[in-house]
Amino acid sequence: MSTLPSLKRRALFGAIAASALAGVCGTVAVRSFADERVIPVRARKFTYEPDEIVLKLNEPAILEFTSADVVMGFNAPDFGVRATIIPGQTARVRVVPSKVGTFVFHCDVFCGDGHEDMDGTIRVEA
Amino acid sequence: MTHTIDRREFLKLAGLGGAVLVSGWRSSAARAAATPDSDFYFVQLSDCHWGFEGPAQNPDATGTLKKAIASVNALSEPPDFIVFTGDLTHTTEDGQVRRKRMTEFRDIVKDLNVRNIKYMPGEHDASLDHGKAFKEFFGETHWTFDYKGVHFIAIDNVSDPGASIGEEQLAWLKSDLDRQPKDARIVVFTHRPLFDLYPQWDWATTDGAKAIEILQTRDNVTVFYGHIHQEHHFKTGAIEHHAAKGLMFALPAPGSQLKRTPVAWDPQVPYKGLGYREIEAEPREAKYAITELPVVKA
Image (cartoon, rainbow over all chains, first blue to last red; front, side, top):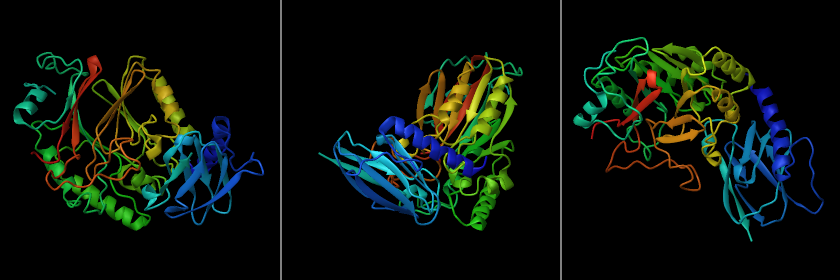
């Protein structure tokens, strides 16, 4: 089982499935509007910067990911979105928060010694 | 194997047993006939994480596995075989250190009195090198074998760092099951849960639903897995999924807190939340009785 094809499959699947589920845009095509907020998120071993993302209820936002070192993942199951973050590329997901609260996200590509601590939260405010 | 006493009764009398999950158990007399599909039992050990350092979670990181092995060796009857369901070692990015840990692990488990031992990887063993070091030490990462009327299948859902089984292995699984009768007794070993137990903590397999779809074509399938470091029981359709405790640190119940922070060591109750299990198989009835056992006897 080779990893790269698998990651490519995941990226493609993620883009298609997430678009269907939550209007999410992957690395292939981004459907967003000019006035939507874009939040850059930089992934590096073994953290996200920022690791707390604050969103407004019902306000769409684009999360724009880059990796500083190795292939990473971003997975926020409560929002039905994920992305594979490949160094040198930008991955984007679109979220429309529909519920107030704090939700965890994590890296879902095993990336090294500290992988299991690589997570963060999305806080949705009214 | 001929049982002259009921092992679960013995465990209760000896005060060794933890929770016992049983369904449809027959009398010991009926189990006594040594036919090809006669009753037997095996032991599941999981998530040993050899090489882990974290005194707040386990101040006896180098002693717990050895104590568990001593406990297995002290069982009233030796199991027919032992299976390690992954995370034999704790992850490291250094391939030399990974192999050193696997060497040490292999040397430690040589103390088991049982020689029939099956190994499968967890993501800590295999995700950073696609199972290369694991294969050098312990063989293939997915496999099958037949034992006393039960068809055992190990599915590798960790060698891909994205937690996928992959189309190639799924095709292998389908091909293997196609050779089994519909009412075959099937036991599956995995590391991660095949179903979406709690994706927020990465307690899932990316394409696990595809494996479940394939497995559902057979009437009698039971899954034993690890990864979540606690006992857990769940059904998808007719398939039972049973997670085992770990042997290094405990993890919280799914969704019980925001993050998957390991449970702190309780000095008042050392080894709390850790343990292993024995599984009594009754192939003719497709029943499995699980007995959870502690690392050390209280």
